[in-house]
Image (cartoon, rainbow, N blue to C red; front, side, top):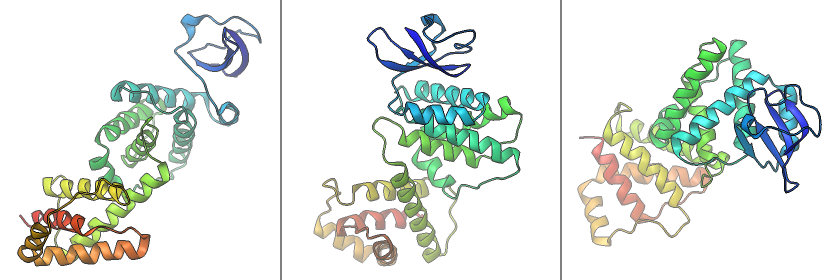
Amino acid sequence: MKLKKKLNNNAILVIDDDNKEKVAIGNGIAFGKQKNDVINKDKIEQLFVMKENEKLQQLLSRISEEHFLISEEIISYAEDYLGTKLNEHIHIALTDHISFAIERIQDGILLPNKLLNEIKILYRDEYEIGLWAVQHIQNKCQIDVPIDEAAHIALHIHTMKLQGSDYKQTIKNTSIVREMIQSILAKMNVTIKEDDISYQRLVTHLHFALSRVGQYEVHQMDEDMLLMIQEKFPKSYQITKEVTYGITNKYGVEFPESELGYITIHIERLNK
């Protein structure tokens, strides 16, 4: 395995024995090395093929090496925690985010995450990783990192799972869930704590309901059961209709009638 190009002191492009270009990461791996030098495999901590080598090179040319290492440590922790490899794009997307976040925090610019409560519920594992990452950044950079950053990092990690979803779609669905929750609580004229089990169940159900829309996984409910729910919980059902109707008009998301029945049950539980 030979050195093709230094990216920074801790990241290099190499050519392996099969003449394939890969990115090798290791503490001080590029120190004292020249082009075509053989790389000691014992120095390599991570090795992967990057389809976006040019983007990675551009990124590493304009960010701090420290930020790159912090991001790689977070990625390694996330993969160990989740027990799975993340999409290779994480090395660009999260590194860029982490570097920018550190710089703006140092400049006193704090960006609140309006989806914090929903992310904590919907992506528990990723949020726990985000909390670890926040503490890690604080320790490494000696800055106070707001808890909102844990949610930002959690979304990046969630969408970079190999089976994960599109980042923009995840943001959109999570925002819609938040909007529906706020509308439901306003119509009920109640305040519910975020750690309330009924609240968490409603958030989770709305998230998966959105994921199922337009697919064949929609929960089916017996017509008699749906009619019984409408008659037994008329106020909750009316709120469900008003909220879902608003979402349909705004986003074009249409909830099937059977889904309204399930949402009604969850709304009714908020009263108990």
